Length: 102
Image 1 (cartoon, helix red, strand yellow):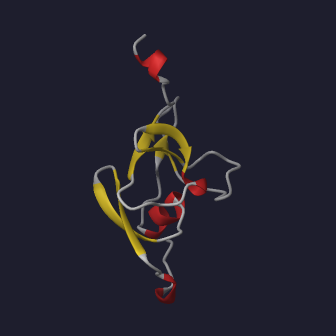
Image 2 (image 1 turned 180 degrees about the vertical axis):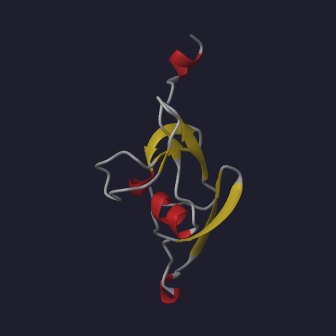
């Protein structure tokens, strides 16, 4: 659905999404890089488990929540990609470490 213009690939960075390597342009947000790589869903809803993906791309809707380097509830549209970043699908709601043991 989304495709990067061929003249818009600047310096490249590589990060992983759910263990798979993704090559992105330096300066891209995580959400933009995922969409450019053909990935449309980056989280599931807490109630039904329905897949959700980036929508507003400006930090208003919270549909692009992902886990980045082990930290959940990160808005992918607001975080620039970095070399070696580990991004994962956020499944349901993010449990704080104190809640995880309960």
